[in-house]
Image (cartoon, rainbow, N blue to C red):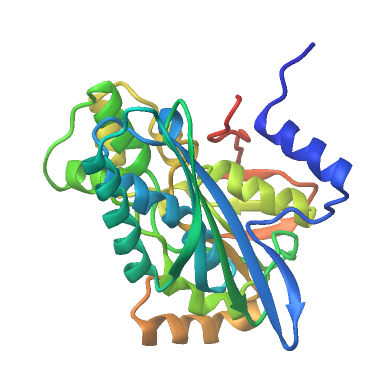
Amino acid sequence: MTKPSEKDVIGIFSSVLGIADLDDVAAIPLGKKMLVFKTDMLVGATDVPEQMTPRQAARKSVVACASDFAAKGARPMAAMISLGLPRGITRGYVEELARGFKAASQEFGVKIVGGDTNESHDLVIDCSMIGLADKIPPRSGAKPGDVVVISGLFGYPAAGLAILMNGARATGQFRKHAVDSVLEPRPRQDFAVLARFFSSSIDSSDGLATSVYEIAAQSRVDVHFDYEKVKAAGVDEFARANNLDPRSVVCFGGEEYEIVATIPKKSLPKARALAKKAGLALHEVGTVKKGSGNVYTNKSLLENRGYQHLG
């Protein structure tokens, strides 16, 4: 029998349970608002490099939910944390986890109200978050003529993981930015203020290419973006020094917590004005065209590849 990928597993459960719309968050109407839910699981073996402290791991488990909320313009209110802890865990380790959760609670404006604890063979942290939104921009709303925007540039986390896990060479500010993006990832909560203008949006934690493909496929359009406009400074030099493909570092790495969105042209002037007022960088990197779910960069078809569990 074939082994299912992460997407296969999601597809099986959505089919059996009748979940039609898969998105970064789940939401149900609550009066004039939307009640927003999100859960995300961190597992030590796949999500925690050995250089990451317990405090950083705890914080990262909340980052994942906060980033998805930001992509949808949702305001987090409360979260519950479930912990799987290996036998023999030290008191000091648990105290470090607690300090990480406290720091995340203060940083992201979400009150941690409870959870559960169990024994496991590896560190497991499941964060379940709840909040409110005025509306939820779907992945499926992009239309031909829309402009593709991103909250930041891509390539640092893949480079950081290569440095931490494979001994890749890097120096100076590039090394600092790359490593920090892995150990202290920053979700783009401030970018959520622009969500009112989004026709579609997604958090990019699985990688740029696969995230843009999700928008293209669910919206039934083609997306074209400029590679030069999405890559972080220094990626080309880092890749050359370590015999890596810079396009892979930028497009396929994963562990990014940027927001990818589309904005109708008629809404772009207001979005630009609000971004300027809020001190945000609004990177306009591409366009949406008629099509059937493909993604192109500089006129070349981009491979649909990114980080995937069970892959």
